[in-house]
Length: 212
Image (cartoon, rainbow, N blue to C red; front, top):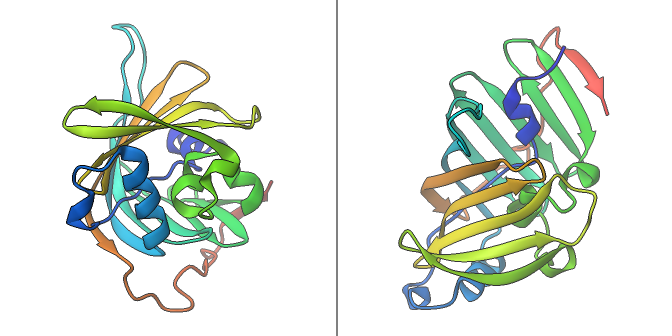
């Protein structure tokens, strides 16, 4: 059986946090580099929607949920509406759990991250190893950063990150099929206290498991 449409965005993930007020007038690149270097973990809420490119184009319903991450490579991305789905990584494996199907897909985290949007926020601090970063100007009250994957083995052409006062407020994910997905963030907590087992995945009882 196929996972719901949000599974295609399993490597999507996005986040943000409070930063020093001195970053208010800094460039998007400076703001984001400070964000990455000073943030080891964070939690918050997100909304996700696809942009309709034409009157006849089909888009998936908007979704929303919560996230928690600890760099590098540990995160919990929980879709709550319109239906429940969990993406969880423990630093080694990525688990995608569809509650309605009681189905878990397991992937090696290194293969699942790579030059994906998740690598920007949940990976290592060495962003420029996998992405070409550049300023993208001001729009909608945000300073935008453009991240273009260096690897050709990715479904994303570019990733936009909108910042205000040192806080990532949004991400725009443009894929090779001409679709754009927009993520918006709110209620950030930077560097919360986390337990050692916070990201350990508990396999649901009776779940069908697929290893990739």
